[in-house]
Image (cartoon, rainbow, N blue to C red; front, side):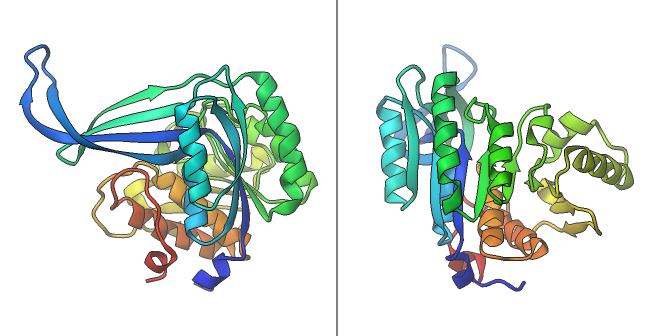
Length: 309
């Protein structure tokens, strides 16, 4: 690959999307509850990490890129924690606080190194807050090389279509991590990164590799998207564009936890492309990053040293 870890430091990335706080409760499991057939977890410690779009930004910053983030947080303790953690990670924050919507939390209960339960706390932000964020987004565009729109379907990217239009007018490449069945709102983006289940929701089940290729290319053409990168877990990644497709096999390593792996892949792609790397080299680097991070527990980051070892 014609890219170095020093080169990554030149990228300027703006991440926009659904901000979340990932909380973990760790404990030991030694018995089944007498109240119901469920394990009893005796919690002995806890942890908090940035989740959603905040995890994308955290990964980009960890790779050395100048990183900023936009999104909506509640006026509450979890929102304060996210703001503090973003600041500690060296990420420039342009966050709107909404006193009508609580901060999104994903609480995971871990017993014997296995996730036993996830509890989600969420409520969509109000439309007035999102419109305020849209004006701020337009003002920030000139300061960045590349825009990442991280859609978790929580309401933070209600105006994603307009965000893509504004970025294209400003001459900024746009990478989108999509969600849901309505992909028309992502039309005109430079790169979409669905996983297998997400793509299947939109194009239906494919019967063969050739059938998949036909469906993926038809979607890419319909949306006027330059590239579509399909992340395929143990099957690696496939990049579809106007020329020959690129398939990168998965890195052979033990899978411990896939939480946040897509965020790491997106962040690595963005930083590589933002630093001037070729799309094929960026995909290969992102594939390696994804292979490393699934060997870690929970939402995690990788360092440039790990990535280039």
